[in-house]
Image (tube, rainbow, N blue to C red; front, side, top):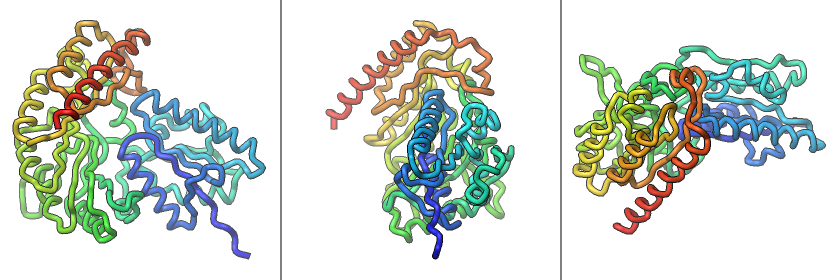
Length: 389
């Protein structure tokens, strides 16, 4: 009698990069003979693809691990094998297992191609297998992982153009868990998009921690292809109806980019440009490498050049030493720019970062109050802008 395929449940917890990584992991496991399921109650293997950017995101992961552990104890079925992959695995390494005895394996984001072999070994030797972290500092993913042709959405696909980051914003853990900035070749990116279109995909989102910094070598040319040139290449692809990109950094944004956004017919008129703070002093502590005045000018240029362009942002309140005056400057910047939407976060200490050396001295209740004030302001602005249409 043929043995039933082992079922795998994958939960994505975090950003669009993780969504794409989960698709890759799913395809690799499917190719290795596993069956994907949307029901964790029926899964033999549960994989949590994690984000380590904020404490709240990590807390949700541990909550899920605890829930799945209870689920295994209360079920007549064998307890599922649980794996933590992605940024938390890279960030905490073997300390993952100190935090929870329920976790069977952990794999950093650059080693996701190893997951099928790891899961196969665990399935065969469950109970005997030494719990272990798989991570390799500085490893570049095999290009093949990007050409799976597997997308959850039948009309839209995420396409990674670069990985890692070298900006080293003082609050951000990304350079420590995703590594240095690495660009995929433009030919491979175009190839992936064209293959996606053959499968019926008509919309694309280009992904990177800092897409504006993209560069790709071109044979016979001294100057590499930059991000704007890549946008033009993508815009020219037949069969593609619409595309967009995330995320941009203000220090790399420019009038030239805005002009390209306005001129390229298939490019969505949408820009996510994180400001994080409106205080010059706090931005310097954050190592953001621009001033509020610079950001305000960028926002003004964008709105003038990109007709009916949508502008969204990220904001952190309660960064160490943030005073009422610093916060007021952030609040006033939001009033001036009038974002279409904003993702507002309360600062939380991240391991390995420069900001972790600072005293987290803004009380929790003050962070909560400031968060609420900016959130209510942005909701009001969003409603007003929606009614303007």
